[in-house]
Length: 131
Image (cartoon, rainbow, N blue to C red; front, top):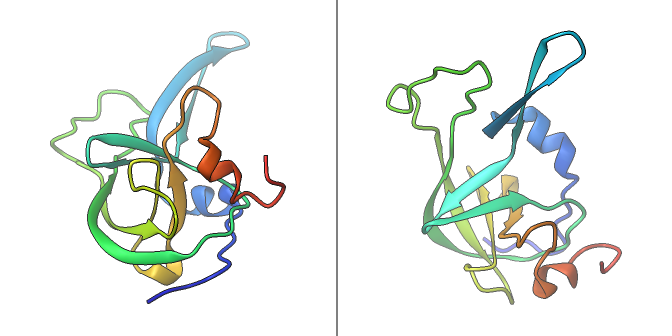
């Protein structure tokens, strides 16, 4: 199934789904806090969600993993290896740069490999504001 003009408001879906790759820190008087970023593992690469992207989903590529979020510490990866999602190609972009992931093409979320805080040029062209 192909869909054109998909738009993703990253924070809404990321908040609704189980997240991965936790980081923790301290704030105030020894109050520990944790947060999980929406990260996807596919073909040995780590992808992060990108908001406000228009894209066309291509063929199914295989399986990707949304790792479990260990925001409490001490979680054994063997107990919860994460969630398996389908990975789909994004028309016009190499899967080494970006893919769409979800239980179905209609639910797929756009994710891209980042270099630091920069999005690849191919991905920047798909964002609503072009940057």
